[in-house]
Structure formats: C-alpha cells, structure tokens
Amino acid sequence: MKFTTLLSKLSLLVLVLCLSCNSEKKEAPSTKNYVKEIHSFANPNESVIKHLDLNINVDFDSETINGIATYDIENTNAKEIILDTKFLEIDQVTADGATTEFSLGEFNEQLGQPLHIKISNDTKQIAVTYKTTNKTEALQWLNAQQTADKDHPFLFTQGQAILTRTWIPIQDSPQIRITYDATVKVPSELMAVMSAKNPTQKTTDGRYSFKMEQPIPPYLMALAVGDIVYKPISERTGVYAEKTLIDKAHYEFGDMEKMVVAAEQLYGDYDWDQFDVIVLPPSFPFGGMENPRLTFATPTIIAGDRSLTSLIAHELAHSWSGNLVTNATWNDFWLNEGFTVYFEIRIMEALYGKDRANMIALISRQDLDEELEGFENEPEATKLKLDLEGKNPDDGMNSIAYDKGYLFLRTLEETVGRDTFDAFLKSYFETNAFSTVTTEQFVAYLKSNLLEPNAVTFNLDEWIYQPGVPSNQAIITSDKFTNAENTLKTFLESDTIDTSLTTDWTTLEWVHFIRNFPETMTSEAMAKLDKAFDLSHATNSHIAMVWFEQAINHDYHGNGVDETIESFLTTVGRRWYVNTLFKAFKRNDRVADALAIYKKSRQNYHSVTANTIDELLDYKP
Ligand code: BES
Ligand code: ZN
Image 1 (tube, rainbow, N blue to C red):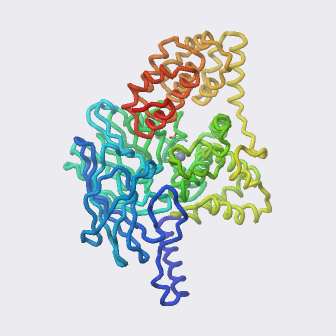
Image 2 (image 1 turned 135 degrees about the vertical axis):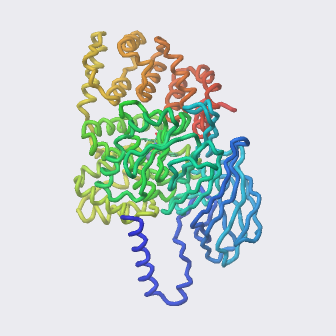
C-alpha cells in the first residue's frame, strides 16, 4: 500500500471514529497504547514525539555534532516529556519557544540517562540544544587513512538497537514513529546523506537539507558524511561510494532494480520511493544496515562477481519487515530479522533460482546448529521471543532471531503451501504498515488469518516460546552442497585435488567446502589446497573469512596466512567476521596472539565491534 493510500485510509478511519464519538471524546488523546518498553526511559503513553526538525553542525576537528533537535509533540496532560540520552551534553531546552526546566536522571550503563523536560498541557513543541561527546557510541569518526580514497575524513552513524540516543536526544523505542526534516552543515569538501530524501551532488557551502516524510522508528535515523559520489542504477535505485569504489559498487549492485521489482511482486509496493545503497569504509560494523531509502553497507561485499549481494536483498527486504512493520520491542527482534531472512531468500530465488536460494538457506540452517550448540548451557537464549530485561539488546540479540526465525517461517510455508503463505504475508505487511507488532500480536494475527481459516494445526507455542528447534522443521537440502562435500571427501581420501571439479563453483560452494573441513584435517592437507587455490589470499571476503577460521582451527601457518589474517583484522571491522576470527583464536588457546592483533586493530573498530571483542577477550581498554 502506498503511504498516501495509508494516510487516506487513516483519515477515513478517524472520520468514522469521530462520527461515532461524543464531544468529550473529541478531546481524547490521539496517542496509541504503547507496550512496556524496558530499553527506553520515555513514557509515550503520556507524551510522545511526532516530528523532528534536526539542525546540526558536524565538526570533524572536535569530532562532535552540535545543534538543536526540535520536536512536535503530543501530550495527554503530562507535566513532563522524557527523552532518552546517552553521553550527550544538554545545553538548553525550550517549550514552545520559552526556556523550560530540564534535568538529567541517573546514568544507567546500558540505557544512558532520561532527560526530563517540563511541559504544560498545551505545549506543542520542544527544542533541545545539545552536543555529542567523545564517548558517543553511534558515531565513528574516521581519518583519511581509514577510508578508500585516503583523502578526506569520514563519519557514519549506527542507530540500531539503542544507539541513536548517543547522537540525538530522542524517545528511543522502536514503537515510536517520527517523520523528520534535517539541516546538516559539514565541511564543504564533503557530502552528507541520511535515511531520507538525499542529494546526489555536493553543495558549494556544505549545507544539506533532508526530509523523511514516512514515519520511522528512531533506530533508523542515520547520517553519513564523506567525500562520496552518486551513480544511479535505475530511476529509483543507485549507489553512493568513494570515488575509487563507485564503479565497482555500481557493477556489484547492478541487479538492485530487479530485486525491488521481485520484492514488490511478492509482498506489495515498495513504500519508500527510493532504494539506494552507500558503501562505507571497511570499519562499518555490520554487513548492512537497512536505513530507509539508503542502506548502509560494508565494502566487503564488493567481490567483483556479485556473489555476496544476498546482503542487499536482505536489507531491501527490511523495507517491509522491520521498517514498514517494526518489532515493537527488542524482545520481538525475530519479527524483524526472521521475516527478513525469509524474504531475502525468496528474492534471491526469484532472481537467481532455487539452487542459489537453497544454498543460502542451508548455510542459515548450519549457522543455526552452531548457534544452538554455543547456547547449550543457555537454552533461554534460543527462544524466538527473547527476554532482554537488564541486558543490553546488542548483547542479547543473536542469530537465533535470523536462522530459527527463518526455519520457522519456511516450515510454515511448507505446511500451508506457498501461495497461501504469500497471500498471508502480503496482508500482514499491508495491515500493519507503518506500525509495530509484538510477538503476541503476531501470533494472534497468524491464528486468525492463516491457521484457523485453513484449518491448520501448528505447534506455534513450541516454536516461539520454547528453546531449541521443534521436530516438525522443514528439511533443507542442496545438491550443489552435496557435490562440494563429495569433492572434499575424495580429496581427503586420495590426498589429491582435481581442480577441474571446482571451476564452476560459486562463492557459496567454496564457503561450504571450507566450513566442512573435519577436525582431523591436517595442516599439510590445508597446505595442499592453499597451493592449488591460494585461499590464503582469497579476494572474496566471505571465502577468506572461513578459510582464516580453518587456518586457526587447524594450526596452519603456510603461504603467509598469518599476515593476511592480521591485515584482514586490522582493516575490516565487520563484527561477524572479526568476532568469528577472534573466537577461533580463543577456542584454540591462542588468546595471546589474538590480543597482539587486537591491540593494533581496536582503534579501527566501531564501538559495537570493539565492545563485543573487549568482552570476548576480556580486554580492558
Ligand atoms: N539490522 C541488521 C543489523 C543489526 C542488527 C544492527 C541488530 C544492530 C543490531 C541488518 O539487517 C543485518 O541483519 N545485517 C546482517 C546481514 C545479513 C544477515 C545478510 C549483517 O550485518 O551481517
Ligand atoms: Zn537484518
């Protein structure tokens, strides 16, 4: 459904409601019922932000952002409005233009500090003058050396899950939705882009204006500033990157328009008008982040052969699952990620066929087994519906949401049939567009719109509220992977590798082949493979990562692999890669080697990666 259609439906609804309500009720608050939120200090049932006008200055010298965040608010007789902040300096607050009282509450390690702002019944607008500090967790300030072109500094933000409050004072719960305008001043040689309507060219004065007309949750507020250029792929898709990367990126993501078309055919119109991707410097802590209209991506997916672009399908899928229909709390995170993996794999199937889709699905299935094994002593963490009370959501959110979430939805699909399931998902996105859903609401919706009408019984509670994987799980197989397994088996038995068997392998087959090395594999056998394929210098980041992991597992040091591991870890900050490799060091009793690298590489990592590795290696900076 188009956003404008939604608006007209909403106004119709309001009209109908008002016709049936008496005059006292007209005064009733228009705020909805927000569920209890453990990761925000805000009290949106009393007073809530609706629109943000952000006016900021990005200062690379002091590595701070300063400015004014002005909010239109809705208030139901509350005497105060509470915003979330963390490591922000608050200079002044006004209510409808007049200075008002404010106070910062006690600091909580995970959540930061509530900002209490005094308002009156009829306050319509508040404005907060603030500055970020050097403790900010969302921002990563990079020097020229840490970029691709090595000419200019770079800045990017990462909001999910609860980091937006470290660069904007805000009601930082996924249940909140705001539209925003922004004016951002940056050094004139740089360009600024946001999760909003974006420029495609630099301005002469470094001043940029942005508009996000669809209401979004605060974790999707995003900003990147650097010496970047834009190259369109289609009328509504394109890439931003530094100059030396732009053509490579443009080729790599060449199928983006086709992906949007396939996604729309599956689950309805793309509601965000534009779908662009920005390639960030290699320290970006994620593969991708689904900031609306502008996905943020790691350069490690630029492989030269479009083999790692399922990540783009994934972030695109979030335009429905996550950005349009949002998890109400971080305990419901699987509603964002499980649906997105399912949708990602469907997009990949539509573009490239079942073989590729099944390989991605089977890798997810294997990741799930690995994650389940890792949580052997913590079965609670393997439930789809989480309980993150007292935890930083960033520590509590693991790949169970992705991989068990996917398996659950695939099992449902196979149970009810694909056509029925697709119709259900389409209506789910349409019905809940621009709002949030709790796990319980989803369960109710699923029962009354899929299971009951089709007279299907399904062990929903077991899947969602119990640990582990129920026995009625879909079985995923891949001939391509079986073939790769056979090649490995023959190699191990004969000690010779027939390189002609691998010439048509895709990245996924290589990844599977390498991940399947048995524990008993010798470093001599690894040397043989390395000699045949030079895997220690693989240019594909995913192949390199799994090979490095095996080198660490099997005590293999040939062909300069120790040096390439070190240089990989000091340039790439993608948490999944970095964490996998440091975990391998730890598992193999090589913490000292890990620490020697980490002491050099840590300065290149964004806070979310550094926090994870600090904890893993018990490192105190
Ligand atoms: N939204 C996530 C990234 C995220 C999750 C950031 C939780 C902060 C907290 C993004 O869509 C994602 O899942 N990225 C994956 C990509 C993948 C599964 C294809 C990644 O970065 O590896
Ligand atoms: Zn995701």
